[in-house]
Image 1 (cartoon, rainbow, N blue to C red):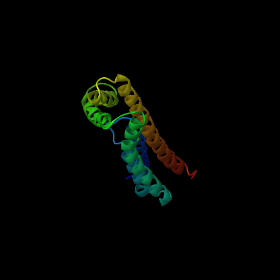
Image 2 (cartoon, rainbow, N blue to C red):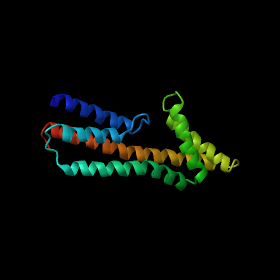
Image 3 (cartoon, rainbow, N blue to C red):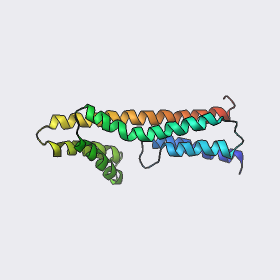
Image 4 (cartoon, rainbow, N blue to C red):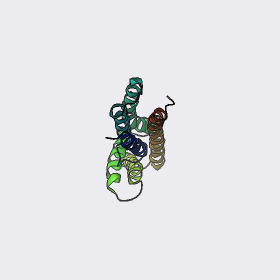
Length: 163
């Protein structure tokens, strides 16, 4: 296959991976790491293996953090296990609702409803827990996006022989 086509495929995967860091219908950094691996092994790229290892480790960390951070920030803002469970259920349901950002709306609704099911008299606590889930989502998504952008930049800089 022509190196130019491989490079275009890699760039497409890297861009889709960056989009996937905040759109749940795309597998995010997994697409980015595939683009990086195809670039490294599908072309005659002189990209050092340290980048492959580093981005592999950062991708694994990102996967773990995407589950841990929202739960931790949810708890930090007074949330309970009910809110955490509601977050997971709401996200899954939201993915299948045909509205823009349904997964995000579902996650927040799930946290809120979960907290109200736990204690229906404390709406303020449910709102604080939802705020914590939002902050956690921003942190986790931000980390993943930074890793995705870094992968993209490394590949582009290597293509331009700057690295």
